[in-house]
Amino acid sequence: MSIKKNKLRDRFNKKSSESFININSSLENDKFLFEEDIQASIAHATMLSSQKIISNKDSKKIISGLKKIRTEIKNNKFIFDDNLEDIHMNIESRLEELIGDAAERLHTGRSRNDQVVTDLKLWMKKDNILISKKLKKLKSALLQVASKNILITFPGLTHLQTAQPISVGHFFMAYFEMFNRDTNRFSDSFRRMNENPLGAGALAGTNFPIDRNKTTKMLGFKKPTKNSLDTVSDRDFVVDFLSSSSLMAVHLSRLAEEITLYNSDLVGFFKIGDQLMSSSSIMPQKKNPDGAELIRAKSSTISGNLSSMLNLLKSLPLTYSKDLQEDKALVTSTSKNIHLCLDCMIEIISTIKIERSNIDKKLKSSFANATDLADWLVINLGYSFRSAHNLTAKIVNFAEKKKISLNKISMKDYKKFDKNIDKSLYGFLDLKNSINNKKSYGGTAISEIRKMISQARKELSNEKY
Ligand code: ARG
Image (cartoon, rainbow, N blue to C red; front, top):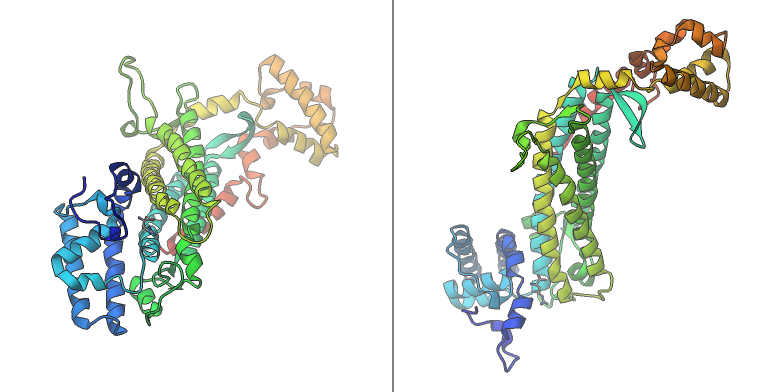
């Protein structure tokens, strides 16, 4: 419902129709930018007066009016009107009610096209920092769980089949690496978005002697953008954000999937805290890992938003088209979901229990050390790796038939496969030794993981946020 007059309709003979107001209004999706809109307008008004484009008196009136509006919005006293299209026109219209004619001078030398990108960038810079801080918390929780459980042997998998023994610490540090790259992606996108769009005008710049360096400084940007056409049509920074978020959501989802799997009563390797589970309305025994499942699910919304944004942009000519208005719903949806996922994952990781005895039981009946047996034949008896692989496969078949592990095959039986096999093999097949012999850089040896953890701790404490 329209309450106020839309001042941008002087060119028309008819009022906006209801259906047009409904499709054209972005208010629901850009209200959240009110703080940044006011901040940018204060900087703009200050610059206009210091450049003598408007009077000092008008600038002061504008700034105090804007501050009043900020308080009104914060206290839920502000009346929003969809007919005014967006947060920018709602604020401008209210400013006029509050201070009269001076308000009409605020839009000198700027356009909503540079205004909206400025507001969005300011908001996204803040959100980028909040996300980076949460990522840091998640990484520190991963370091904690990795170092606490470093001595627990775990089945490393390929194809979801037992492959080789690893340390639980190695498992969690793998996710640390992924999230570390996510941090880098967010800080890269912060750097790229840190350019001030204000002053690009509608598309061509402005006739007024504005000072873009002044607003750049006031708003905390690194430098002004260089091309006014690019400035108002650029949404790379939105794609950057949606893309960094999507990849991080994929990492969160993979971790959530592993946790769901290992937490299952069929596997029983991990235990998620009760505070992060829900039960069933009919099956009283149930403890369901809903938090982890929802993290997995929300990543699909997040990557969907990236795909929507790329499709939105791909056919747009220079410069501004109204299509660009749709970006904000994607940004807020991704941001909301990313924060939910990060908060929940931080709690899951900080409280997760590793069920050592269940893991040990399962590992004992596995052939996780078969590759070590093949390696032993290469190192000690001079086999080529391929022939060692063949012989080991035969030995595994033998052990499987006898329902014993490789360590439990007697020396007499081993000698039937090759008379030169000797007792030193047993030590090599021991799962702890299997892990600690993988000393190659980045391998699963405890000494390697400890090095990686202490390096990561140092890096984390030097992180900016
Ligand atoms: N509500 C618009 C948006 O979010 C503001 C820019 C309007 N510019 C225009 N030329 N109609 O994109």
